[in-house]
Image (cartoon, rainbow, N blue to C red; front, top):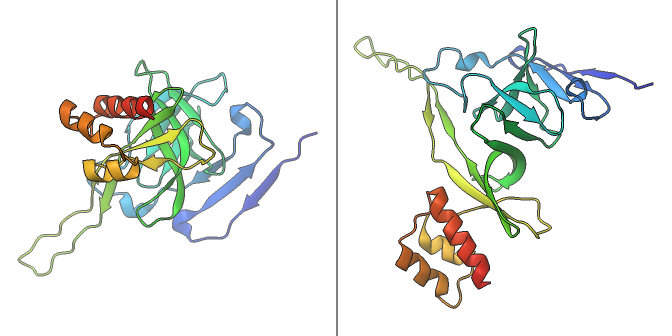
Length: 230
């Protein structure tokens, strides 16, 4: 008989959550998830913290039944809406592959990466291209800007808002033992340093083709060429 362990955490009210831990099998009811309360700090902010404001049907891992999901970029969570309307977040303790079934054919995976501070974190990335040599990922970003109170009776308060941040591309070597994604530099100079263009062929290729590092199609050409010459 399976044993059910429920752990309650005593934390501030704005972050109340109960963790439900079950044995892991390919059933939605046995996924590990958190039932939480949204951070009230964001309630009156302009814009959206979500990659997709509305829930979209998706297949999670190998579970046959599709689930409504949406991606919270600010809190770095994947939310699921149950049939009774309850909204939950998948635990970040497990890896997920999420394939949207809305016709877009978009696929997301949870991956480890190094953030701006050099810390190793886990987040969800859109998988946009894959070959036998590498996989290319895309990460959209949203920043939260807190409200600015009025400094005097002549000023107006500036409301809090969500603004679009700088999106980034990442990649993984298919045959690498490392589980961390590599951020692709946005400047040609940094790219050539990262991918060790010792003989200058990559630099000549970039100059000739006039490729950019913020376009998916261009990056695919760059990486394909890199693996051909190596």
